Length: 200
Ligand code: MLT
Image (tube, rainbow, N blue to C red):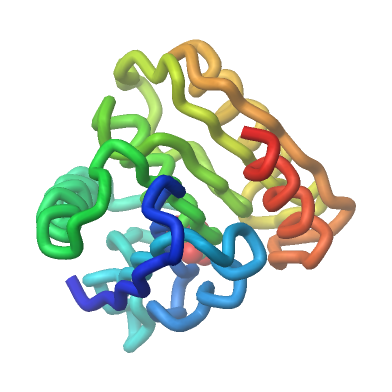
């Protein structure tokens, strides 16, 4: 997958896996990585799917309606890419913290839904429930921060609480942070995510 890797100063820190929103690329969330942890490795990936020229991590049939077959395929592809990247760049495969926004948060949530060891944790900015009616792996020891907007037209509040409860039922530790805003990524939620990360 197209990506960039910046080696951090401190190899004991998690590797931050940056996953952009629809129409973004691997450069978009680099400032966010610096705000969360300036000493960690950063692996920033570009989604392999194009929707009218806009990169995404998996196909959708309509706004908010995911192509489930493609989601499953792309989630596996990303998980396998993480295995390869950990070998190539010599970082700890078991210590990856995903940071995703919107479509990037959705594929991060999908990694958690499908693979027990894909991630150590995740910061999900405005995620949706990636799939319903599936049994999640045991996520004991995984920490997840969800930032959601009370007026988010793409991810209604009930979807954020549903995601929280599905992850908690799988034994993940989940913090849900609310902004009185819409789907946008706000400075205050990034600040809250960064405080949460520092408290781990
Ligand atoms: C998605 O398709 O992943 C969500 O609707 C968020 C978006 O990218 O607009």
